[in-house]
Length: 204
Image 1 (spheres, rainbow, N blue to C red):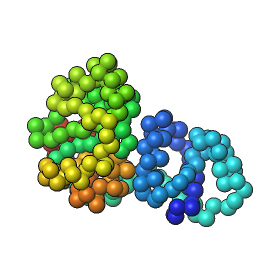
Image 2: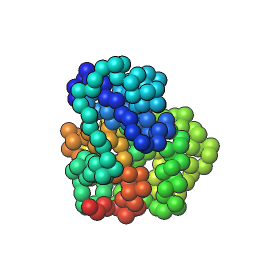
Image 3: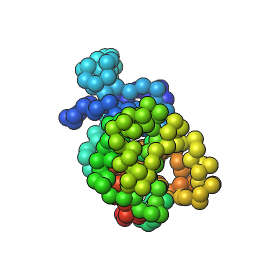
Image 4: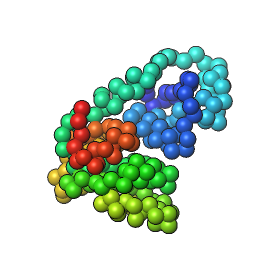
């Protein structure tokens, strides 16, 4: 699919929340450079499949199954086993709900001493996290925030300064963009990312 293609997604799945929609949008932008997409019933121009296509016949019809989604985590990864230098939740920066999900997923566990956990947030989310005790919980786990900057632009400099190479993330955008910075990346769901941060390594 090219830049001028507008994907239409429809199916028997629950509508994503705001954060899920945000992650989908940035992943599409980083993977195929799409200027627009339709998610039937969710995006305003696509309340029905017919409305999304505007009377046109789709050029392609691809069926995506749960097994295809599971396979995408393996196929999108260049790191399948080994020591984890750091786990990154960023690209885009996290909402306060995503920060809460990370803290809840840690369940009081500490980050491995040889692994870093990076959460990129904007100043407003950092202030909310301070107020709600989430910052303190992260500090108890051995980590803190990266505030006010996007991770991707500084990734090459961080790689050069630290020598870190093995990265785990739940961000499809980072997976699609970090190979050029010399990283080996494992793409995993939130829980697996946190397990890797605590264990200091990841297994296939």
